[in-house]
Every structure is written in C-alpha cells, then in structure tokens.
Image (cartoon, rainbow, N blue to C red; front, side, top):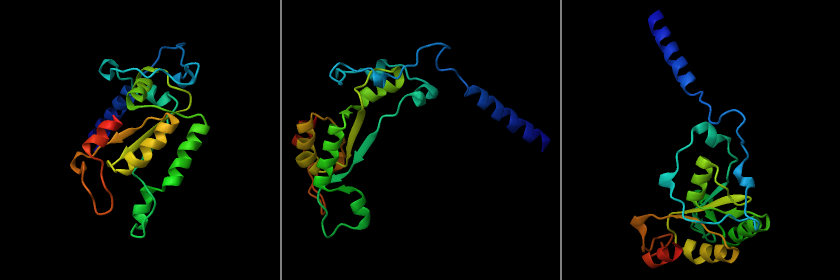
Length: 185
C-alpha cells in the first residue's frame, strides 16, 4: 500500500511540475491584441495560413481576452408543431434581426475562425469588439433570412454544413442546396 501511494504521489508531482511552464519571458509585453485595430475599427481580412502558425501553450491562450461566439440553429418563426425542445433551437426572425442590429449598434465586428486561431496563438490583431457568428445544420432559413440580414450590416459568419442534408426537403425544415451553399462561400 505504501508503494502504491508513493508511486501515485510521485506521478502527480511530476505531472503538476510539467504543467508549470512559462509562456512568456519576464518583462515581455503582454498587451492584448484585441485593443490593436485599424483606424476604422476593422482589421484587414487577409488570407491566414494557419498551417504556418505555431500553436501556443494553454496558459498563453487562456490569458487572452475571450471572444464571444454565438451559435444559431434555426432562424424562423415558431410553428404550432414546435415543441419546447425545438423552441430552444429556434430564434424567431424579428428577434434575430434585432440581435444583429444590437450587435452592430454596440460596435461589434464579426471575425472568422482563422482570425480567431491566429489571435489565440500569436496575438494577431482583431477588430474592436470581435464576435464570431456560427450557424449549424444547413437550414435554408440561413440562406433566405440570415444571409441578407448579415449582408446589410457587413457581417460575415461561419456555416457548418451537414453534407447529408444538402438539397433535401425535410418534414420540419428545408435544407440549402449546392448553389445556395456556393453563394455563402
């Protein structure tokens, strides 16, 4: 029993010591890059080659200012057949438009995953008040309602496409077709 305790204690001590790395040398500037923006509040959106970015350690990433990420599923008005669980995943159209207007009026600027990845790993500059908007499930309402709403505000978004549903007409929801998906890219 004594041997097992010492072995486990030693292993825990080694693991704990291994997790105590310094992410930056003492005295290095740790200014948060979310404060570094272009004059108009937007950063230039250029192609970011994430394969060339060295992954930062967890301590560095966790020390950075957080960026909100909003995830939407369906943007449509409720139907009488929608149950309580379904309503948890549905944002009514006017509510969605009001949310996007509020974000724009509050000075938020949308970013894409490569920008977030570069920021978290290298401290690359982001626009002031960055936010990421994501849409799941390939619902057609994301093309017919979300896309025009975001376009009016100059917003961009991330769409997670379910390839098995492309072009299908569902019992409760229709899905985007290939041409609509191409227009989103």
